Structure formats: C-alpha cells, structure tokens
Image 1 (cartoon, rainbow, N blue to C red):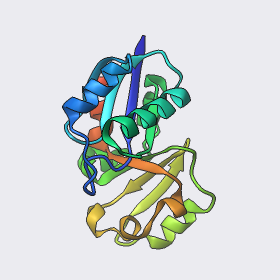
Image 2 (cartoon, rainbow, N blue to C red):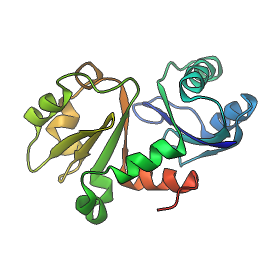
Image 3 (cartoon, one colour):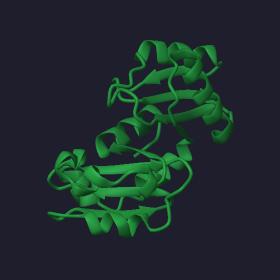
Length: 179
C-alpha cells in the first residue's frame, strides 16, 4: 500500500465542520490504512492502493453519510504531490513567505480563461500561474487583501481547494516524500 493525500474543499472553513477524530474514524471504517489529519484543516493522509478517482467518489459519499456534508474531495498520489512540490513557480517567495504562496489543487481541471480572469484581478504585486492542473498564487499582502481571493469563484476557476506552501510541505512530509 502507498499513501494517498486527500484534500477537502471547505472543511473547517466557512462553518463546515467535520471533527478530525471522526474524519479519521470514517477513513478507517472505509478500510483506509493509518488515517492521519493535519490540524483541523481539511487534509487527510491514508494508506491505500485504490485509484484516485474511485477513492474520491467513495470519500465524498462517506462524508455525506457520516457528516451530512456534500464536499468535494481531491485525492493525490505521492508521485503527483512530488510533481506539485517541484512545480512551484514562486520558490523565492515561498522560501521567504510560505503562507503567502498558495497551490489550488483542481478537481476536474482549470476552466478555460481562468488564468486570464485571475490576472485581471491582481493587485499589489500578486501573481498567478497554472502548471499541470494546479493554480498557483502569490499573495504578497495576504489572501484576505487579495482581489483574486475576494472575487474568484468556482464558476470562474473550476472546483478546487487551496493550500499554502507550509501545508503543501507538511502534507509531503506526512506522505513520506523526500525533499
């Protein structure tokens, strides 16, 4: 068995709550090995050889059954996560200000025109890049002050969930990736 990194969209933000101990118990009940969470931030790392797309659907169904939550789940293998880490287009910014670099992992790809739409919303040195189905953001003044963050929606971007560079690296560590 190998690791699977599971990201939930909107868990423990915006009032959507799934207690981490119950999230781990749900994963164990599904037969997923060694379920671990990263704080209360909508991240789960498990052991499984199941394919990502089937596991996503099963996790989403279990979230609905267990918590009554209809949330999107994005599953990535260690190899996919290693490529994501290596692709960071803002390495200097991430080294200096890791909480201000965000990787938005997309469920079904980036919508056409999303990058241009985001670039039209940038202000104060912000930047956006798309690499291998991940939207990367540099928010020099923080997300809360960002025009992109305030106005970009799933309708504009596609369905995804963002993790700052600190979280990206912690998940890499949890999945046993060498950096």
